[in-house]
Image (cartoon, rainbow, N blue to C red; front, side):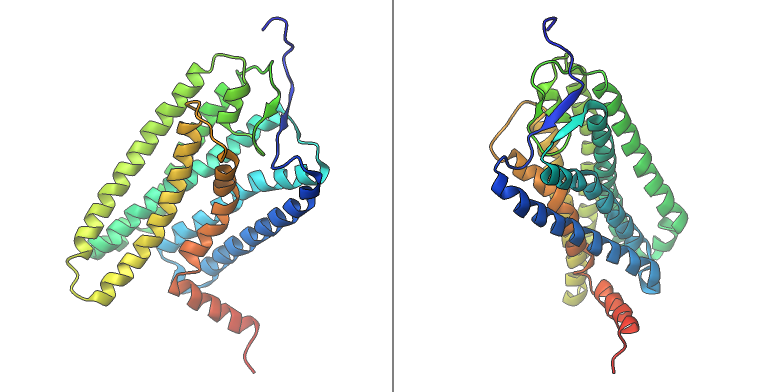
Length: 310
């Protein structure tokens, strides 16, 4: 280690080394990014402008759309820049800064899904007290707690990441900077860093999953008591969208931070990373917002105002 110089820059391996694929990949990811921006901005605009969507459930959906915009903006512009210039060079400070913002926004999104499960619990299991339990003040406080928890977690990981030294390989086997990839190329002792990943992820993850499971146990128990099949199917459709997002977000997060931090690798690492950094922010508005009847009605109303029928 004494004979090796300390590195100040790193190189991202990118998506592909084949020159013939650079332009097609650039166009594909540019299209995905534009669609992500359009769909999430559309979701936010509908929630802000339509009075029927000014309820706690859609307040959280709007915050989820904002986080999707932020998550995709942390990673995709860097992918497009590397595909266009083919440099892939990044300073260590810029790399760890990207890690901070990605962990912060992704952590907020995961915790917000837990808050949304609590919202579904109060709406279905305690409908008479819903307006009191989920007032606007409570909703803002819950979102603030989510941001504070995620900010603290991201700050701790980032501060300890700045203590790492890189003196061997300078190639990050990914198209963006993240903690597991930094651990793999660091020549420092990363025991504390990995311990923090498992402790913070274990505490927040287990707490979040416990709250979600308890919420859905009560939800399913209450739904099964509903006599009308139409009302029961409507409740299940809302829960299915939320459970789908919860499974995809937590599944990808557990793979990335637990499986890879433990030293496991397989050929699909980049494919999984593309899913939760690029595809998932695009799927969220499709799964949760645009499939919803209230959103479709609001969109039709706005569309008629802009393009009135003859």
